[in-house]
Length: 98
Image (cartoon, rainbow, N blue to C red; front, side):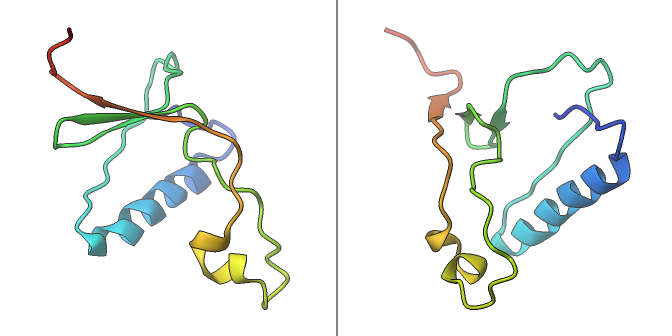
């Protein structure tokens, strides 16, 4: 669930479709919907295996790479990309609390 960007809905939809298409060959089904009320704020992913992954920064975790430098490893290999500080919390939904 995401809030639509009223200034560039076409670009936003294109990015979401690129995510879906890019991870589909890995066996990951990615779906999204736009929140018509524009009241959501929490950033999280819900899996079909019972896990909820809370992302304090959303999916924007990478520092910008120098795309004009064709010899930079960060442009070709994600493991070399610098990331911004962020936290991830994993919750098992429906798990009993103690």
